[in-house]
Figure 1 (cartoon, rainbow, N blue to C red):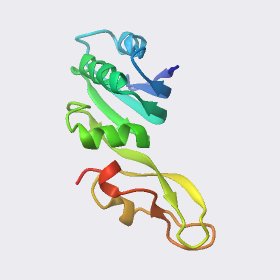
Figure 2 (figure 1 turned 90 degrees about the vertical axis):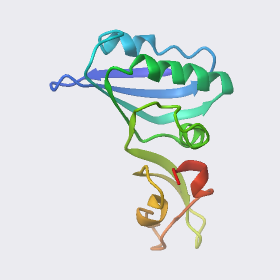
Figure 3 (figure 1 turned 90 degrees about the horizontal axis):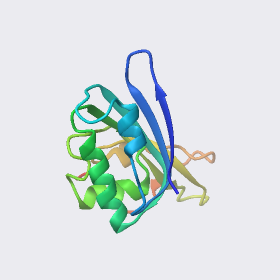
Figure 4 (figure 1 turned 180 degrees about the vertical axis):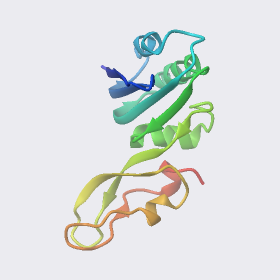
Length: 151
């Protein structure tokens, strides 16, 4: 089940945190309504770090949701690994949305520690913005960069 946390800021932008699993039951209608309905303009910032998984039918539902917000400036931040991997396979999944960052899994090659870390959504960001482990070693992306980031 997906949960939405919506907050309208003083500048008129709508910030939405989406968490859970996106599947065929995904309905972004409450977000579209909070953003002023179809045809409205304005900025919508979508925090996607809490998306655990997305099914194949969920991909279609998510794409339709983003399409219904098309008149607005859409900014996505902290994109989860589940969404990031779909975006690399389906480049126009998020239409003209601005993807600022992805919250991806990193692992320490020295001690094996793991953590999620938000990095810019661009090629090589996993190297340029890799976090430091508590042991002092630079962590590495836990997976292939092309699995999560644009090339």
